[in-house]
Image (cartoon, rainbow, N blue to C red; front, top):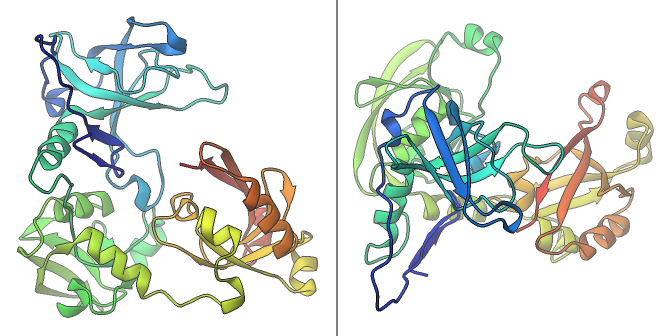
Length: 351
């Protein structure tokens, strides 16, 4: 293996061979349109060289909420994709690869008409970085956090239609050094209007660390701008994790933190009575951990994990201790601030 990139779930491998290998031509995924016919090739259920056909159902689909999905913008297709198709090509009618089959949405563990392929243009960008001398993908960052999908009421109250509302600014990070503050609304980069969070992340991530950009933003309804020096995303987020408040000493090294990336403590009897459910309160979530990728946040209460009650830390640790890589993990979560919303089910497969 030459290199891998977890953010896009792609890797480059080198094969030593004495004879030429057959190859396929990469196409330009940006020129593909919704409704175009495509073919998927793979080995679903170990049935090698299976070909299925369909159309492009949508483009630029993000299926993993939070930071984990910020660089996964898929081509959606109804060409039949099943377990075993992952890594196979998605071809246009010219026989060009415009995507790498990656995932499906299903409630039955099989094909339901919704499959996802990583666009070939993303694959090319990752490939070029991975074969570089550093064998890694370097992405830019300015050290801010924001939330997607804000309601129209937020936009109206804060006076913007398009842009990104900054929620947190990393102390000592590029954005803070440039004077940005929580509550600022980033509206443009180098004079180009920013549509949303994905647009902002894609633009900044494509810039090399050390380069500069001109950010336009709104503060208290007034337009302003500032020059920001791009940082290395990997280092910026590592520093962000180091700057998070430390958990209580008694929680250090427990099973939840080690395996899932979440530190918990028991809730009070009064809170349990209010929620009508015993559970453990999330104190902190490690950036980039499994819990973080599932969207868990401090302040939420975990009542069950994989149907097992977690009313105490001992119960939670006992369940977490049994979980291993490759296992499906489902959290039953309550928000104490909104108990009327009921239990939310979130989860994924532990890598």
